[in-house]
Image 1 (cartoon, helix red, strand yellow):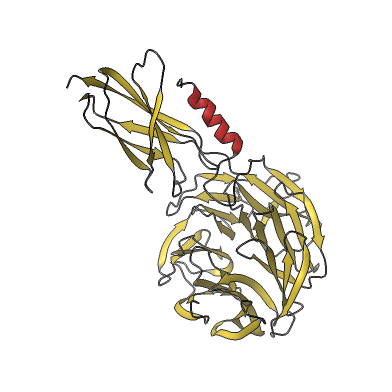
Image 2 (cartoon, helix red, strand yellow):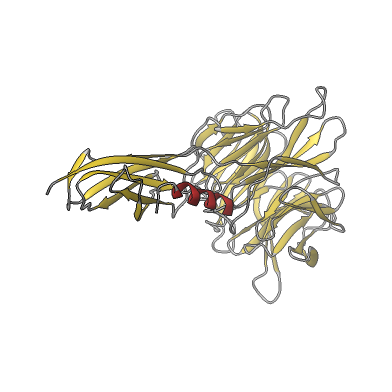
Length: 458
């Protein structure tokens, strides 16, 4: 096979949209903005199995469904006080917290019809019904208010013949209905946060026993506190929770083990949204007059490697991100953002394409090596965003570089830090060129690196 066929294989990989994450291949799309037929918004959920996006419309009592380009597929009515959203692990069911009905609705994601409704026993309305949802510990957890000044956690167990609701957990912790966050990779960890407009309260629970057992609790977390908490998200390993508070003017991270400070992400006025991709990439959004509006960070790096600014309809208006208005597609190729135009108060869904990032491959080898002896190549794959488990590179050998003929001799696994190694046993004397190829994925562009070794006599 000739060396020029490297590029042909890379192009084929890109065309197929190969991904290390999510439900399979999708193709990237250009950034788009689509008006939404709603005037209120609270939560967003992304269904990878059907490539759909769900948006709750609490004051209109509906759930809007769009495709991955932002085009509206359906508006599901009759969902009074549709607030929080979450999907089942198989993406077959969308659960909707109905604050004004005091219930949780189940919607079939294939037919887009409500199939069940579960009374939460909380009562209905502003200071009663459920407002947030998260699957954890084999149950569906929800946050709700017990009265004007207190909030709590409840759970809905659907594993038995009859649904079972348990209320009154996490009492004396929240001054209002808490927001919830969980991650499928560590389903026994549940994080809840609440803010009454002043200092926020953050709590971590172990729900493996079916009960919410508090592991850590912190009021007004962070070096400068956390006022008016707007959103939170767990990292895939459940070791950190990232929060968006209106103040201070940056996003903060805390260790879930003890809620100790664990870094900040430089954004601007006023943080109001955060979402974490399956590979740990953090999307952090603000609702302010400054730009940009959305920033991307690698875990632990306080400086953004990419950002977006939402264009306004005119120089005299703004297009601002809504509270909790960010979500990733599970393959990491898109970010969905809900924005509002300041002049008309109309809402739109922005679909932000996450283009493949520049990737480099470096290869090292000894300048010379005896033939019929082991020769070890080492190298590193580098990009602004890390590489998922199972990443490999292919190793090609050209025994006569002037002829341009190459043979793939094997593959090497890429470690979490991007390093790899491969041992060959060349037989021919003279210059031998090794080429290491990485074919790219939804996040990373095709890249290759070469090194030449002079093979001497035995």
